Amino acid sequence: AQSVAQPEDQVNVAEGNPLTVKCTYSVSGNPYLFWYVQYPNRGLQFLLKYITGDNLVKGSYGFEAEFNKSQTSFHLKKPSALVSDSALYFCAVREWGGGNKLTFGTGTQLKVEL
Amino acid sequence: NAGVTQTPKFQVLKTGQSMTLQCAQDMNHNSMYWYRQDPGMGLRLIYYSASEGTTDKGEVPNGYNVSRLNKREFSLRLESAAPSQTSVYFCASSGRTGDPTDTQYFGPGTRLTVL
Image 1: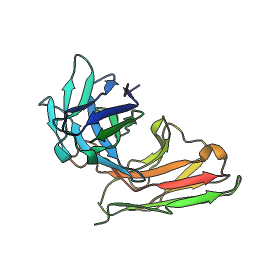
Image 2: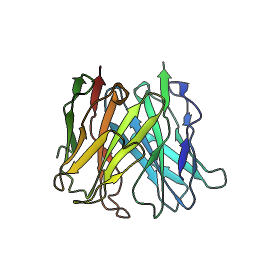
Image 3: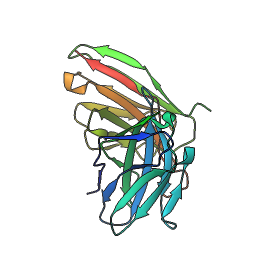
Image 4: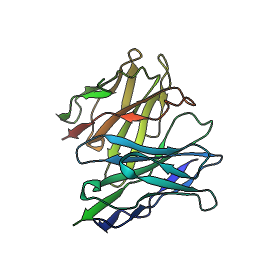
């Protein structure tokens, strides 16, 4: 079975500082990994995905994520946080060949303060 | 191009009442999904439809039924609502698995309260 862990319920960062939101995963085979963002009272918006190839994936709004197979991690990063980045972030995984059923983490609330 | 739309946005039901949540997508996607979001639990898959004419159970299907009406529309029905079904419901759609379009895109959600 596939699973995702987001070990931090909340991450606080000062504006202008780098941010990292952590995600680790478990699948039987090769992973297919996603990050989504949810603003208050809105649906989930797709940020980026890792399929194969380059371990550093660039996505929307200046976000990027680093795939690390040995640590089974897919941490979301941004070099310089903005107050407008404050939102709920979800990591999700599916297994290659396992259809398109995503398994989501429990989410990490990012708060960027002035 | 509206993407994925859901109706209604909000609904309050009494225990035992029934209702149908509607979802439509205009991206010509093959696959559609229904999730529920509860605090501290992330999103959990209720049902999905890999293609028109097929539906399958997800992680939490009990108490729900679905209909894939056509390629665009996928509805979720609660036959006899229970307080445990109080949640935010999201519909999503995606292209065929393995295609570049197989990223799931989400609707704005329906906030349901069952009293």
